[in-house]
Length: 260
Image (cartoon, rainbow, N blue to C red; front, side, top):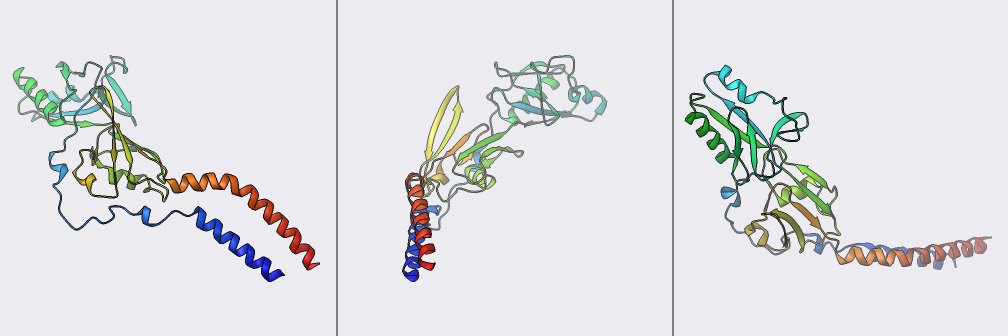
């Protein structure tokens, strides 16, 4: 009698494990993709400054004293208008008109430009006004970040100091997709020209390597949906757990009475 009950319990637990486990086949990336070559999307990739970005701009020249005024923190103007602080670093906020207010030069158009284009614009303005000789301007986007949500190990916001991150790198920072992730329907939410643009990406083939969404832009949101295995296991669990607990309680009583 005890052996039969033990065998029944073992079978019951085995069934539970089989029901709750996701298929390993569905957990693979790029299934069936042959060895090949893809054009390097990073060659043409250059982040574009947008409204709401926070910029770090450094100016240098052969005369450090003359350059210092362009690198001094601005304290006489409210921070909500011009200067924003991230991790105690002062930068220039691109306002809703797409402009920044820069020392001596005043308002400068920034939105829609790359970092190099903005730096070249500032250099040109300094030279035209004969303020510095051979100035060097370096601009950076300080608030470059992406958000990864859903079926990943560590969902959250990822800061990108080098201003370039692929969707695969983002998953790496997020601890990779879980076994329950729906890999053939990854959602990328991007804001372009005042609109929310949503695109779907399939990681089960090689389309991602040709997609303009392979490299994420600042403030992109990546959402990973749960696959059917998790939905089914969750719904089954809600139904089966009370039944299983009641069954185990009953079997415990039976075993106890049999033994005694």
